[in-house]
Length: 119
Image (cartoon, rainbow, N blue to C red; front, side, top):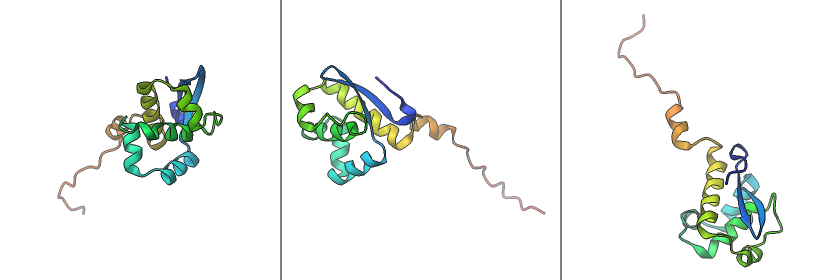
């Protein structure tokens, strides 16, 4: 459930609260300080249950700082929805609100050199 993808926000219901996840530059910095790239990748692909609450708590700090790792584990939001929300929020943080594949297609293409010299 997307909040505002152009701000990099994603919504997730946790313990009856519509929480807002956002990975702004502060959150990204904290994320990269606390976890390796391999660990982050494992979380956003649903392969590391032990770190999901850590990543989620970092993404919630701006709008919902009351959700500590312990409170997230206690609330136990649905796994698949949590992973999807984290993946979306991190993707928005890196690529903005546009689909990275669509942005690449829309990028101006360089013209091939014709081999002719200008006079």
